[in-house]
Image (cartoon, rainbow, N blue to C red; front, side, top):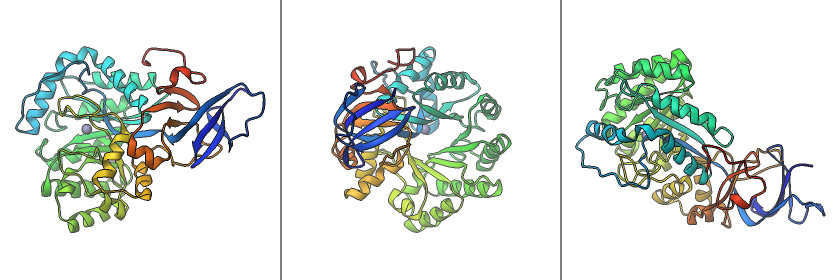
Length: 398
Ligand SMILES: [Zn+2]
């Protein structure tokens, strides 16, 4: 046999031993079941096993180098913010790849192995960011999967970026992005028509950033749902942020929530503390699909408080929703994990090992990641250097 045994690993609430072969959990047995004279055994010393994480909303082309402090001035509107971001990022355009690589390694070190990445597109930068991130997707494919969103940050209509979005889809991007059809594009109908036309013609998904507040945001969501229905794109549409849902009456959110479920439209939240947040408990109760994204992974032009750790973000989600009981804490993982908290023989050996007594305990204390494994191969974590068979060093990995 050429696989790997793990001894003393906490899986499914029990101290077990586990045999990994061909990237899968081949055997999952009570502790003490490892055959005598086996040499390929790694002692996990009671570490807890969790599934790896999925970050459903992240940007890799907006972060500043973490060893530098970039001063920002106050801005009066989202359009001023767009201009400020462009100015602040310009000096770092040549190091985009390096910066994105660093962010990917940081995400991996926290156990995130699947990402939905929004990549900036506009007539100034063309497809340069898309090309860089596509090459990194290839470079990191041994340890991460990524789906890319062609994101017209300056406004699809406002910056005349539709042709660039179409070209990005031809290059391998799978999702059409957008931002504030009212507040940025100033023309809800033109903006949504372009987004849905491009998506339908390429059989692509849609993911729209929506920061517009109150009833302007509500009306925009209603129109997104109308377009979803008319174009038969149920199950392919996502609305990111939707801050407006945190500002509306419960009856309004409930009515909209039922339609989101009916048309299978998903919401993504980054659990913001600086703006209104959709009422996640209510929406979840209604059956709305909601996923978690970090959005800001470190210092960027939008905030100095970004954080790449999804476990920490999940903790914030639970805390802000007053989910204090065991069942609620465990269900918090459904917003950001790639698989259930229980493991079975035959499952892909994608997991995180950390020092915690249970998933509930891990969400409470947010311990560092001791080991992150993808298809049974250690790829990150504090104990990577002493784990069974690390991948050889290569560019793109630390
Ligand atoms: Zn975003």
